[in-house]
Image (tube, rainbow, N blue to C red; front, side):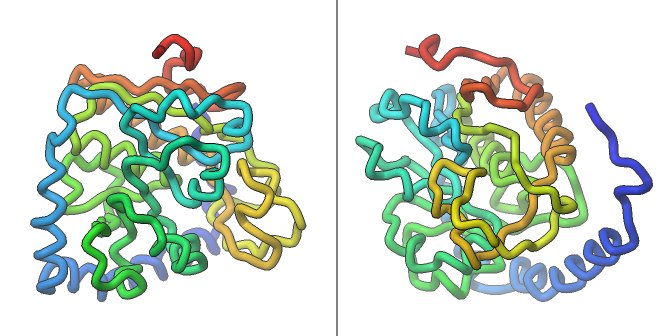
Length: 266
């Protein structure tokens, strides 16, 4: 697995990391002491081992989703990520759960997310956008640790991708088998990782929908090296507990999880 080089650890990258942690403290204080946080924590605990021993399908947002027969999952427990709702016209079901952690995604498409009725797991820092929602649960991102969280009612490691965040939620719920689809692990961005970029292209070729991040919207450039690092952690944590993550993405570039043909699971 590729490791970070000193060149990649630029002054700008280090400075941005420091700034993020400074901005983190007000939310951390609220997470530890507010009534809303305590209520939220109690509500999250209802999901502990709720699906112990079961399997689920994790639906990511890569272009390969357009080649995937995801309607095979209509009677399965599913986790949709970010703007999966843009694919509903091709789906015979809606995800059992929805996960979105990225602040840019949540704040730019608030109305869309508020229209979704299934249990949703969102970033604690965006809580003001989703007040008075009984179907929304907030997780607090831990910026001071890369440890895989086994208790999302306390904290969750955001890492480089919403997929890693979802795997921690799935682990907490007790699932013994996770099958991932649509995780292409391949982007056309030439920018440095973790940089906020305004989309200039008319068509978003990085996701299953051409308007996923429409022209003029903001997105955070991907960090595939960090993603691989955290995926490796997730795989070890699952397997240590006798659980497994499989990657059934069509032509996916990720090499961390065992590959399987989707049809094998049916």
